Image (cartoon, rainbow, N blue to C red; front, side, top):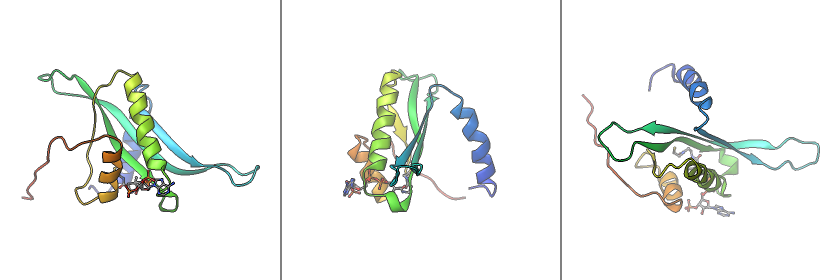
Length: 128
Ligand SMILES: CC(C)(COP(=O)(O)OP(=O)(O)OC[C@H]1O[C@@H](n2cnc3c(N)ncnc32)[C@H](O)[C@@H]1OP(=O)(O)O)[C@@H](O)C(=O)NCCC(=O)NCCS
């Protein structure tokens, strides 16, 4: 990644957040006392992307990021975020949702498999 990745992400995010068909979700942990605010423990960022114009499928949903704070993991937050993102994409008449995750990221692969994802294409790369 580039050294100024945080700045670049901060510039990219608002442009897509303003797209009414983007799906930006947060997960909150309920407040433990009545006067405390709920704690933000996770988020999901997804947008609608266009295919190049040679395919029947003109556009697809793309999940860019899912993150859950380590202290809040293994309680179903990510499953709920992904399930809700898929529900919202369905209401937008999106018929396919894609994502990329590292092959070694086993928790993520289990999460997405549980939510119905299968391996589509396999990326191959070589460092030059
Ligand atoms: C991958 C990641 C998003 C999963 O988040 P999570 O909130 O822990 O996910 P869930 O709680 O929905 O599921 C995780 C596990 O907890 C289990 N679980 C869910 N609710 C549970 C409960 N109430 N009690 C016990 N276990 C539970 C799930 O079955 C699942 O088990 P598995 O991993 O053995 O299949 C999280 O680890 C993370 O943020 N990682 C870093 C970022 C990342 O890799 N993102 C994905 C790539 S974009």
